[in-house]
Amino acid sequence: MVKKEGVKEIGGGRESKHAKLDLTHMRSPSTLVEVLLVLAFFTYNPWTVWSNSLCQQTNEEVRPHSVSITEFGAVGDGVTLNTKAFQNAIFYLNSFADKGGAKLFVPAGRWLTGSFDLISHLTLWLDKDAVILGSTNPEDWPVVDPLPSYGRGRELPGGRHKSLIYGHNLTDVIITGNNGTIDGQGSIWWSLFRNRTLDYTRPHLVELMNSTGVLISNLTFVNTPFWTIHPVYCSQVTVQNVRILAPPDSPNTDGIDPDSSDNVCIEDCYISTGDDLIAIKSGWDEYGIAYGRPSTNIIIHRLVGQTQTSAGIAIGSEMSGGVSDVHVEDIQFYNSHNGIRIKTSPGRGGYVRNIYVSNVSLANVDIAIRFTGLYGEHPDDAYDPNALPVIEKVTIKDVVGENITTAGLIEGIKGDNFVNICLSNIILNVTSNYPWNCSYVKGYSDLVQPEACEPLKERIFPGHCSDCYYLSDQIQSSNSQNRGAWFMSCRTNFR
Image 1: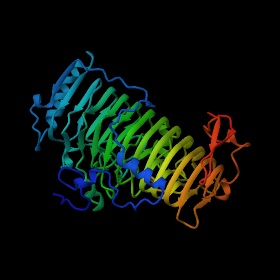
Image 2: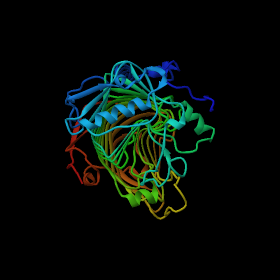
Image 3: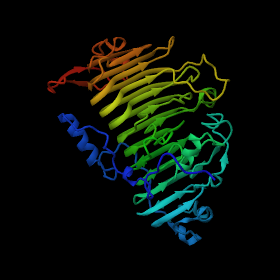
Image 4: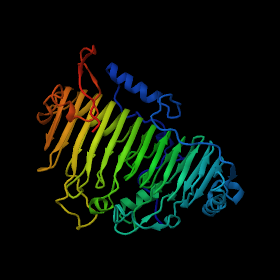
């Protein structure tokens, strides 16, 4: 039996104070911008219904058949193991898959379970005060094969534990409710990781593979053992109005990780975890190159969060299948290590291109913009060190930040420059005497304060608009003293 120690979980009687926005480490705001940011953090409500959604609406029609988990003998006392009840209920509902689908209703209670599989045309609905609890016995999380684009478990050679909620080759799957909770009770796994006593890679909280038409909404996810929501090899995925929480020092508890997936929309979410809030991936070194499925057409809209160890938005480091056409807008990060980050390494191959990030608010962030070309860590010794990644056409614009330690740490790879990196209308209150550190990178900038590093100082306008991805027809300029605008023409480039 493994002793539970180390990081305390969120909720369930353990450190429930972390389930609220934790601003205890923020210094008192001293400028108007900081005041507005803090007010935004306190008033943000992920359950607000917004009128200007960027997500294509997913079908949420009422399923013609519905059962409660209690009809299959489940007991919501937080002690009784209900794995068989979930499995039997879903097996029964499979008979309605070709009859309009079905809904599995989880009422108020604490429903302990091991891993279970979803089916197509299913809605898993958690009512208010319903909590699905992951078992603290690793034997209740079966071991499955590694992902082909990774070649092995992400942490250890061999297989990996199956996620708590899992699906494979599915269509039309909805995981939603009235703000119910899915709690991975991850501290047992965090202890195994810290003590180096894992036998296999830790499980995710929710993983869907090779699936199409996925909606995850209106729920809270806490204490994941590893990554929280992991759509891999999926299409048409929407994650909307969710809250994801894990202690700030819980290891590798990423929020949402689209992986070799396309047409993904993430919107109106609050995430506070121990690793990247969102990390876009596409396979690891030679395995990701061989599998060859990119992550593309990804929208991230209205995201608020904090991560003391990692990045608000990350791409990589596993990006060997390629990442492209990512649009990120209206995001707020505070008390975080990095704001926007791209991670890669020789041996990754692949590409990151056509990335557009705009309307970013930062407060108390160590490094606002960070690109890392030597991130390292390979699955085995068979990777090709000459497989160099292509990093190009990344536009970051309309960024404001208070109490930023470093504006940018942008490090490419010798002999493999990151190119067409474009920065526009960025105003950061930086505490360091050396706000930028850049190497092996080439790009352009306009209206950046503090002034961008030498490799990025050449102006975007008028000669390099076509080199910068997705700049609007009119770029509004301003300075930190006077927000009065003037305009300059710049052709939109969608290439």
